[in-house]
Length: 112
Image (cartoon, rainbow, N blue to C red):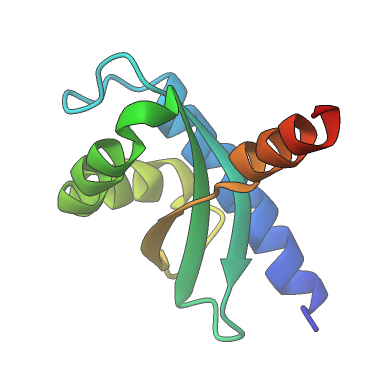
């Protein structure tokens, strides 16, 4: 069960990371559209598990690997945006959210 503070911090992380991925010029991301779908924060607010939806999904693994390799750059840009709102910038762990693809697969199976 998440506390109110965890929910507020996870919404803040989701909003600000979306701006980092969409607005800031990050050199290692090229034509992918990245959406932050779910953020789960630990009770001590020190770790954040971030689930990303990557489009086009044919090279999602490569994009996730590039994001994980440049985690320090993303965390720094994120920290600059939330430095007045969070005392500690959480450690960011990125994962692929494949729920959209799963829903499309179920839809295709139901149409058959």
